[in-house]
Image 1 (cartoon, rainbow, N blue to C red):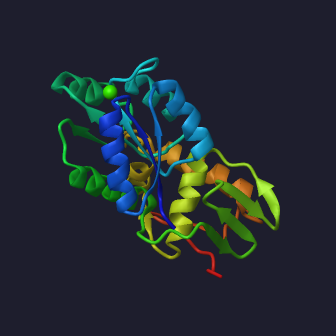
Image 2: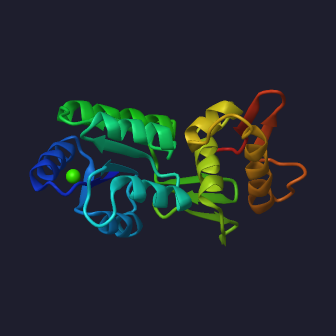
Length: 228
Ligand code: CA
């Protein structure tokens, strides 16, 4: 199943080049030409990753990134034309997953996209649905069902669940999970525990004795469900 990439850039020549190259690399690609369209397309196209230029009409890339981060953990690779933009991007700690400075090679862009997707999704093969016991995780629509009933998760809870459930039995340290979530480390370990505790209340039949999200004492968490 091809992963979905949204390319946001107003320079038509660049958009066309990127799109053609990524399609050849078997990605499913959609494009947006300004910041407002980008936010609409994130909702309607539901990309796995966004390539986001900083210089855009209507809303610039930094504003778009800021708005995205309020509601989603979607991976974002920024395109920048100037060193000052890179400084701003790093200084603001807006949570971009990577950035590329123009001019760049298409091969490099595709390679960076693959690295970020691998890091975020933790795996190269991405089934669209994961079933463990009575828990069903629909990654394309980001829905979680427990015993056929829909469970409402925050984007962060969904990302934690998806990451662990894709790799049953594999132990993730708190720092690894924070990295995947794009959270800064310092002081956030407790907030991760809070997310996990909230997640357990929503998906575990008995949150006090979890069977899906297991604590590995002194290390982190792992998924304990049997894969079906
Ligand atoms: Ca531009």
